[in-house]
Image 1: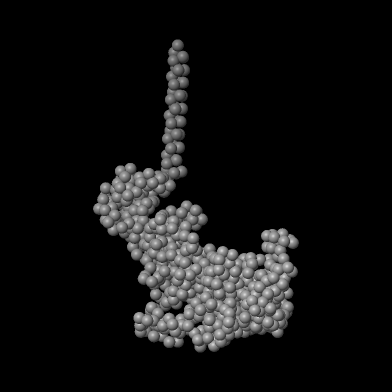
Image 2: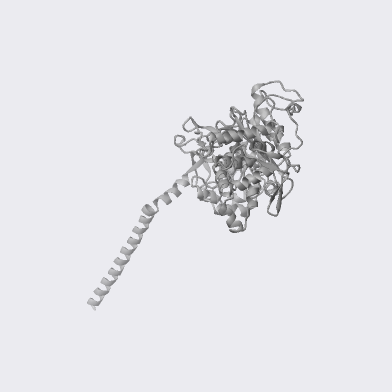
Length: 620
């Protein structure tokens, strides 16, 4: 019996000891889990219970023109934010009441947010609401008022397709670039998007003490705070007075005007109409305003300068001429007879001049923009050679301008036609049409302006760009962007000289005489591209001065009709302002003159119409 009791005691002791060892081991694992494996997690919680990092938003960089005039500025703006870890239902209910928001909407947003980071629930508070929230902030644990900045545009500044707008980063954008945090305001279009990283600056940090409920008690240690760094300022190649004048020329029209400094590739003016009031997308964007812009059939959000692709019409005849000359298919003296039409099999193709041009050489064909001459020339060139030189001259590919969403256009090739129509499904008529800038060929106004730069410089050109340099507030240095030069080495200077002379004749008695600037020797080419949805599109491209070029310009007016009658006068007025502004500056502005800034030549609008040296019966 005694042996049995002793055995029972030993067994109970063994069980108790085993239980204690296991319990101690479990407790040891718990400590290991708390203090080693999840040390940082619980340390963060404990720190956040007493110390909070408050992010300080930097001032977004300014955008200025070439003269240093501010085009895009900032103004303070306050946002309402909640921190999920410290926000009780009572706070959500009160904040929702003050802001006129739905409680469930706020809770749904908080569920997707980080525990300790402020989640913005309403931006751009009006002064009355901000004051109300500030007065009650002590009774709203977990609530913060965040100082932010919204874009401000001085009077008379618009150009939304250049500047773009900013908006709150979405989940897709945040995943694509980890530098962004949910709630950040980033560039969504235009320069704001292309240069967002440079413009946004670097956030600062302020450390504050908080109690257990999340109420802020003051600074923790001011010496630990890190100030925000101002975003870089962008200095553009634009003279904004010239940009404003260009925009005034396109009011109530659909289309684009692009002007480039051929010596650098710097954009002098970039206009797309119709557009929208850039202030409508500054700060809190009204849902109804955004919906109206999206549904507008005129597509005001769309930059026609770089995104819209059109058949270039007769401006593209210069490409066919270059291809034929460089490949020794013709000489400038090669002639063709134009009776006003051209028979191709059973099909009759009409020239724009029903009376015909008679017998023409290359110079006469360019000067008078003869369709029949270039129909025949296109057939001699062939699709493969035509496509080759189209691409050599920059078409069918992006120019690389510092704006997002540029359209590459379309240069049809044999492979393209075979894919679309089948190997025997397309005819020589397709090629004849391409030679005069019609058919499947598509170009952007910017590509045409770049092409004119190539012609002006006899093959040398530069990447089109809007930003000349920036000032970096972190390094306190001015950073100039290198000018990227390119050369069309496949085309000789002699060939460029021939087509340049043809374009010279276009504005001196040819189809582009209404584009001629009095006193300025220049060259140009008209174009009228057919449009299945209405009136033809009106094109005009030019460069000036002829001997020592400075500026290239391309103008398109959708459904404008005649390139020589509609687009050419617009280009002329712009070039007159460009040249006369420098030659005859006048500070005094009278009521009957152009409303422009001091230093711009105030020529009366009527004086901008030149007296033509030669009148011709038709304008193409």
